[in-house]
Amino acid sequence: MDEYLLEVRGLKTHFLGNKGEIAAVDGVDFAVKKGETLCIVGESGCGKSVTSMSILKLLPPEGKIVEGNIFFKGNDLVKMSESNMTAIRGNEISMIFQEPMTSLNPVYTVGKQIGEAIRLHQHLDKKQTREKVIEMLKLVGIPAPEKRVDEYPHELSGGMRQRVMIAMALSCNPELLIADEPTTALDVTIQAQILELLKEIKNRLNTSIIMITHDLGVVAEVADYVLVMYAGEVVEYCDVKTLYKKPLHPYTQGLLNSLPKIEETKEMLNIIEGTVPSLYDMPSGCKFWPRCPYAQDVCKKERPKLYEKDNHKVKCFLYRDFEKGEINYGA
Ligand SMILES: Nc1ncnc2c1ncn2[C@@H]1O[C@H](COP(=O)(O)OP(=O)(O)O)[C@@H](O)[C@H]1O
Ligand SMILES: [Mg+2]
Image 1 (cartoon, helix red, strand yellow):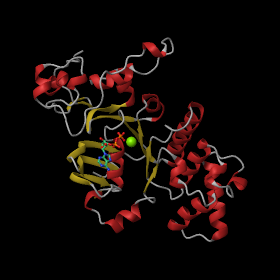
Image 2 (tube, rainbow, N blue to C red; image 1 turned 45 degrees about the vertical axis):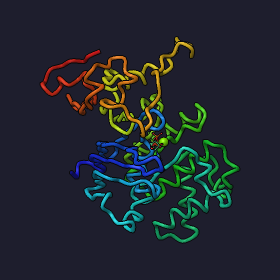
Image 3 (tube, rainbow, N blue to C red; image 1 turned 90 degrees about the horizontal axis):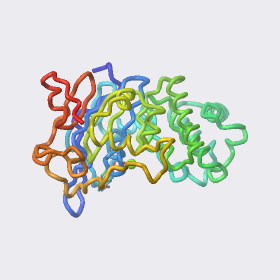
């Protein structure tokens, strides 16, 4: 148990809406060790953000964890009181979001906001706090931090604002950093710089990171392990090298095929046909079968299990022989 910093087991998070109850996260398992980066990848709406909000227990009132455990350093966050969660949030577990402008308060300077985060958790006086803020800005690669510390969010570029968010998230020395699409709103060059920064942080501070993204290009850059989600479920889970070398699930194969290759023009890209099914109207059997090029009768009737071989997990009937110890890489 204590081998993992975070261990999520059988997590189910539901929303109660006017059309009934939906399973946004429908039985998700994964684990993260100290210093490891796990990427959660999948198309929009597949439950990535709800998974991370469940970990922090920051769900809206209509959302509820209905099953499962979230062990953080051995303690189950699902059962933890709100006051204990408050002590963990922004302290032992920090989060950064996609749009830094909406997460920063426009009326306070950068220094005041990061300072607030620091002061909340460390006992420093005004001067020490300012010094610490400047040190944090330096850590995240903001040039002229002595000047930037007195600026307002609107005076910074999108990339710089995201660096400020990262500085804020790191100011309390979290053991786990959850980054939900932290580079999606940024242009490609800035995106690469932020990913580089996150890698550096992981190496220097040994922070565990859960990186949420819909972009397999990002995954290749930063991940140690990858969890592929589809319609609230884990469809594939393995280390990053294996995922790119031998993707098993037809959905993962589709995602990888849709990555632009240098020799191809945009028109020639393979995209997975169809869309993620509505959570109110899930297909019977495997949730992916309506879009799957290999769907068989069994896929339409039964739900596949997460089959496992050599630490490579895949939820697809093509690999049901894994359980018998036979290798059938299917398609
Ligand atoms: N407050 C909510 N009420 C009802 N459904 C929600 C709510 N928040 C998210 N959902 C649904 O949960 C599913 C997963 O959403 P989300 O985790 O945000 O997806 P993503 O993978 O894009 O981050 C989606 O179908 C979404 O519509
Ligand atoms: Mg999301």
